[in-house]
Length: 125
Image 1 (tube, rainbow, N blue to C red):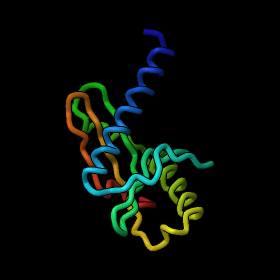
Image 2: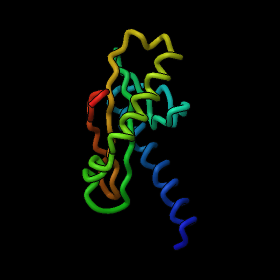
Image 3: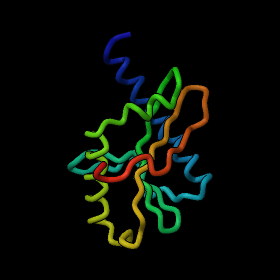
Image 4: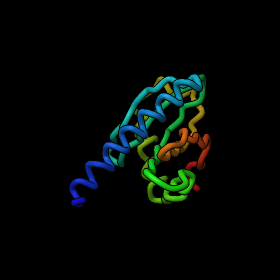
């Protein structure tokens, strides 16, 4: 398989994983406010709200192996990018000022149900 085909395959896998993650969050009572929210700092895969909790969600997909290993692949640089993107989102959405912000991770593995890690990290760690 060529590098271009690998890239297309990974893009499609990411889309499917984000859709599964959004469905999982909806089943848990969250309202999806944004998907693939882009800022000058980067992208947040999903932004979801349930009550006063506003979850900034990173979705990690793996085609094979233990899906929980994907959690280890979220680097400090990626976390900072998501945190900066979240700050940008909050600055432009004043209706979220009363919310408790949380950074979540949803891991999707082939043949497995999505795994939601609420509060996967704390901003600034």
